[in-house]
Length: 302
Image (cartoon, rainbow, N blue to C red; front, side, top):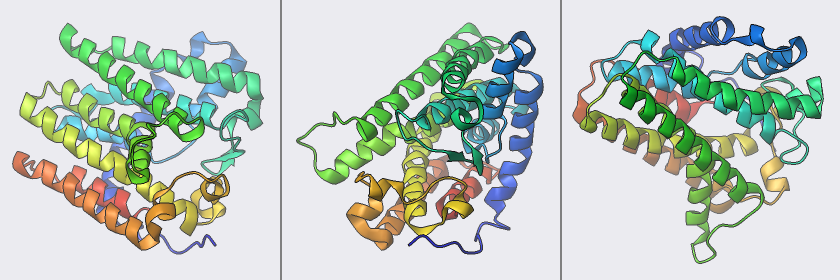
């Protein structure tokens, strides 16, 4: 049975690392995205789906990776907003009755419950289109903008592939079950988290060594994030997490706890956290925000 307990992350430095960039990203999404060009009902629905809370870990990673690579938070905001628009589009569509059929997201009604299914579909479509428009605003060299577009397109493609694997099947049948599960998670959740780190590095004009280090970090963090999500589904309550829990096992989906148990899954989280740390070690980054955020992601309870 899921249980709720006092969150161990309450005073964690990783949570502190989120606060500043998260506030900047929210402010950008609220004030710089051109909501006023939309019909009122579509703007309200899209804003509801985009501005409705959450820690914004993916766009925060864009900002922190950019800063680690020598860039500024401000220069990374359009890329961070673009990634968050894609993430929010994916949540809106995943929650639809045809897919996960969820009625709760971030502690409040999902968009199709709030505004109706047709509007939720169209608002999600809009968010995806607007994401690439944000990248076009960036005052960077053309090759950097092209690279950012390619990263976001690739991350979005792989995320959709992962959702198909997770809900409709199509995984290679000759792979062992654990490798199949890794393939789902690396695509469904990990792809955008890896893209976040790479987009931050590209926004800063990082060299190849830095880009590769942040890519490896993003791969480890991306898989770790979903393993933790699997754990939350079996250890926390719906009220605590802010979305339905216990659904994966009820639907017969492959999960880490289902294959390895809770303790085995926690060992995987520890291993992936160590891999993420090792990826950054050679870079000797002065700021520890990425490591702090990684540690927080490993112990989060929602």
